[in-house]
Image (cartoon, rainbow, N blue to C red; front, side, top):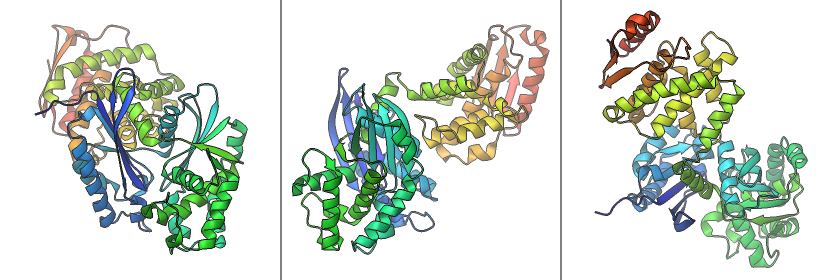
Length: 498
C-alpha cells in the first residue's frame, strides 16, 4: 500500500459549463503541475425554470466526480479542495447534489460566492502573469456568471460577479441554434444591462492591462488566431469579424472552426455575445489571455493555508478591527478555548487545525452584534456574518461560523445546527459547546488569568473539574454554569461541575 502524497495537492472546480481538476506538487521552491483533467458537463444546462437541477445533469456530474476521485484517492483530504460556482449557488436542490457529489468525489464540496470566485480567479491569473506594479483588469466568462476584477500583484482591488455566462445567455438567445444579427444584438443588450451598474466605477478605477481567462475567452482567442484575425491577443476588430462570420453561417452546426470543439458549439454564441458586451461597456480595444483561472487560484490558496498563509485569518482580523473587538479579552477567551479543545479533541475526534481555527474565529467575532443592539446581540452577529463578503470563506464555512457566533449565548439554535449535513451536526455541536464554555468562564471580563480546570467529555456527558475552592470564590460563575447545564440538558447533554 502506497503512502499518502503529503506534498501533492488537488483543486477541483465545479463550473457551470465544465468541471476542472488540477493536481500539483509543492517542491518547496515551486508548484509543479503534474495533472490536469477537464470534463464538459454543462451543469447550467440542467437547471429548469425553477432552478432545479435535473437528475440527468446530476448523474453526469457524479460520473465525472467519480473519475476525479479515483485520481486523487491517495492525496490527504486536507490537501484537496473542491468548490462549486454559479449553478450550484442557484440550484434549489443543491444540498441533494452536494451530498451525493461528496460521496462520488470522496471529498466535501464548498459553494463559494461570486465575489470569492472573483478573488480566486484573480489569484490564479496573478500566479500566471505576475506583475506587482501594474493594475490589471481580469475578465472571466463562465457558464453561468462573468467575473470582472481589477487586481494588482496578488491583491484584488475591485471585484464583481454578474449573472451572465456562456450557457445561460446561449439558452436565452440561441437555444434553437440559429445565429443572426437580431439575437446577437438582443444578447449583447441583455449583457450591457448587467454591466451598466459597474461601468463607471471600473473606468474610474482604471487599469494598465486587460487579461481574459477561462474556456470561453481562450477558445475565442484560438479561433481568432486560427483565422489570422488576431496574433497575440484579442482585438475588438477581430471579435467583430468573428461575429460577422457567425451571422453569415447562421447556425451553430455550420460553425467550422478547428479550434472550436463540437461540445462547446452550443454555448459559443452566448459566450461571444457576453465578451463583445464586456469589450463595448469597458471600452477595451485589446486583451491578452491567461491560462490561469479559478482552479489555479484555488490551488495556490489551498497551499497557502497549509503553509499558514490563510487569507481567512486576515478576513477575521479585519472584521475584528472594523467592529472594535476587545483584543485582550478575546485572547484570554481563546486561551481558555484552546485548553478545552486540547483536552477533548481526541475523544470528540475534532480536526486539530481547522476545527481549532473555527473556534478561534468564532470567539474573535462573537460580540460583533453589539454594534447593532445589546438585545439578542448573538443573533445580530450571526446575521452580519451570514450576509458579509468574507474573502477566503466558502458559503458553508461562513454559515458554520455564523452558527457558532449565534449559538454562543443562551438557547442553542438546534434547528439551524440540524439543518446542516448529517455528518457535520455532531462536530458543530461540540464546537458550539467549547465556544460557549470558554466565553462563559470569562463573562466577568476580569483580566485575571484563565481558571485552572480539567475537562472530560463523552458523547452526551461533560465533566468540568476546577481546582479546590475556585468555585467557592466565584459564585457568579457557578450560577452561570448551572444555567448552562440547563441549556445543555435541553438537548440531551449532561454537564457536571465540581
